[in-house]
Length: 249
Image 1 (cartoon, one colour):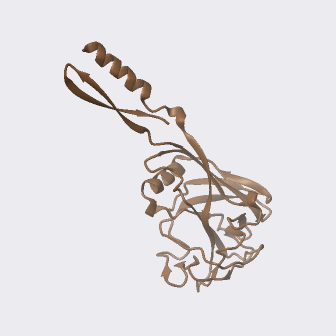
Image 2 (cartoon, helix red, strand yellow):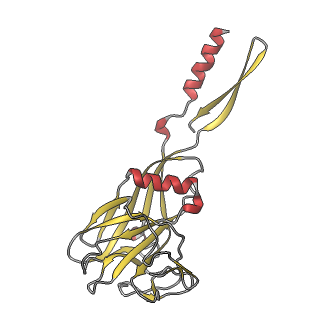
Image 3 (cartoon, helix red, strand yellow):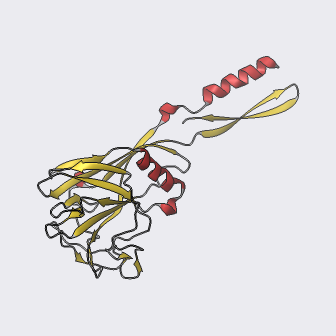
C-alpha cells in the first residue's frame, strides 16, 4: 500500500502546473477618448485618430482615456506581466512624464471627431466622455476631469514625436489587470495624465481609430492559464481514493 501511495504522489508532482506555461497575447484597445478641460463639458474626440495627455500652449488640460477588453484571457488566470505601447503622433519640444491611472467610473466613446490635429476637441456627441460627463449628456463624473486613482500604476518619459513609448510592467499594472479579470465590471481602463503644471506639454497618441494600424494602442499581457483539473482514481485495499491532479496545458 505504501508503494502505491508513493507512485500516486509522484504522478501528482509530474502533473502539477508548470510555471513555464505562461501565455502572451496582444490586445487592441476597445475604446479611447480625450477629456478637454471645459466648464461646459461640451468637448470630446471619441472617434478621432489621436488622444491627449498634458496641457496645451494656452494651458488647457487634456487627459486621455483608454480601455481594453480582457475577454480573451480565461477567467481564473493569473496575470504575470503587462506592457502598454502607444505611438506618439504629436508633441511639444520637451519630454515629460505621462502616468497611467486606474479609472474608477465607466465612461463612453461617441462619434465626435476633431480630426488629425485635435488639440481643441470637437462638439461632444451622444455617449462621449467629456470633462464633466462620463456619458454625454446623461451622466457625470463625481469629479470634473475624471474619477481615477491618485497614484499612477506606471509612468514613462515621453519625448519626441514619431516614436513608440512603452509603459512596462509594474506590480500595480499587474494588479489592475488581475482585478479587472477577476471582476470584469470594474474594468474602466486607465487615464493618461501628463504634466499639467505648465503649458505646452500636451502629447497626442494614436487611437484605435488611427488610419495607421501600427500607430494604434497595443497591450501585451502574459498570464498563466487555469490548470486543467482531472481525476485520478486508485483503489487501495478495496477503498476508493480520489486524487485531483492539475496540469498545465
